[in-house]
Length: 230
Figure 1 (tube, rainbow, N blue to C red):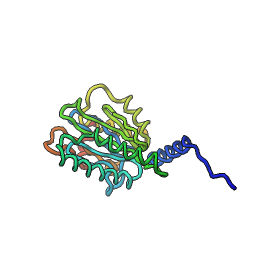
Figure 2: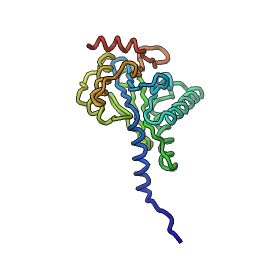
Figure 3: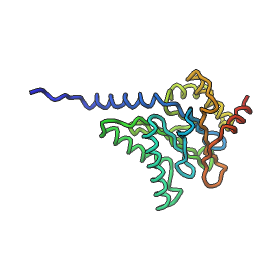
Figure 4: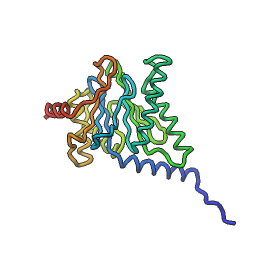
């Protein structure tokens, strides 16, 4: 009688992690950075039909890197959860922290119990009433949550872009133009390619807006902002 094939739990988890990391690395990077008026999100996204950055609630933005179908399903689930919680309790009860905890539980359960893990990395940003009250959360494929400050990156060559941002950023809070320029230059430096205007997906959580804070920045406005920085 042949012995059944055995794989240790440690090896199985390691294989799952390697599989998920490879899938996420195939995607393009997304950078989030605080600026003096809120939070800026910049994605290297050549697709004109698929968004990688979107609004999830009044003052919360969502972005995902990796397998599009998987993080799109998570985005929809997050919107439903946020809407239901805001309706049953209060809109102020819906926070990026609570959503990050929910995503952490979902991804952690899938990673530990399912044969195939999700090939996704998520980023949640929430703009506060004051500059020091912004929140950035990065959620990994295994459910790990990272509470970030000032800026963070997901997808692609995230760690290398983070190293560039740490070297080039200063202690002062940048303006929108400065933040946009820093994000794009960091991506270009690591990828060694010039980002075309058509490949830039840019959005902000604008603290000065009443009601919904999320706003997409169209290509024409991005071009104007970059012209100011030169």
